[in-house]
Image 1 (cartoon, rainbow, N blue to C red):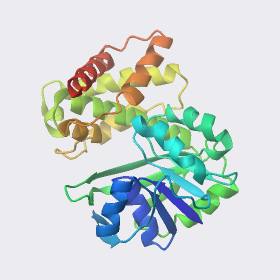
Image 2 (cartoon, rainbow, N blue to C red):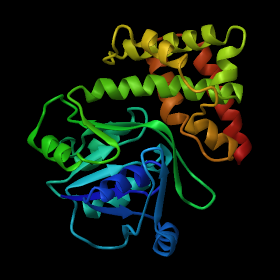
Image 3 (cartoon, one colour):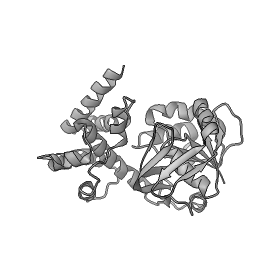
Image 4 (cartoon, rainbow, N blue to C red):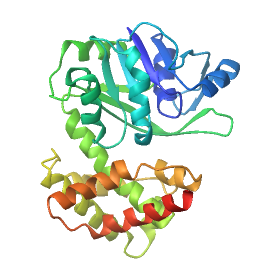
Length: 305
């Protein structure tokens, strides 16, 4: 099975690297500058699951090679339009695309370009970053990638992909409820990214502050109410589950959006918080906490200009 990974950063580089480590035929689609760096230095992963350094197979958008069987799409949402354009030459009638973006707004975008039959569901649970040397640092014990058919079926292609993704040091899990998993991840990442960026703090100080836990619970309930109005398949007790896990998070845990803001980088607020606020307007739901977060993000983005 020929696997193409879009990007070789913290997400694509990590999971693609683990697949390459297990012996799979993996190619990374990267920008010319990243390609030059990786050709000189190789791709390095530093992880609790074991370090790995290798010389990856690389292409750029201008290379012309045969289409791939599976594509892992791990771009940021603000790069999605360009990513879809770059991927077109590498997709044919048999290609399965597994997007790993947060949220759900990208699914219809991908389906409109590549067709519904090409797009599977996917998401990952991992904490990674690129260090100053361009190497991947995976800093927590969880490194899970979930994928599956959006209609919940256990198709032949899904089972073939699951077989190819097995026997790695990361966890690749075939799910028959991938849509629910994506919405659950969306709920969690929206709330955690909102509170850490609004308060400019990791989880510990937020949790320990007077009223902090109640604030987080209120935001979870507000976001969940928007999703339920949209008939998202949330579990009945999902807020309780996430409040339990919130109390177990590391004191120093930071979200990727928080790290991006600390570095003065672009953020995915339109794809995450903004999309939900559009839904709130559609269903006439008041969302004062989420609006406060989004206003904070708009000010941040204005200051980036």
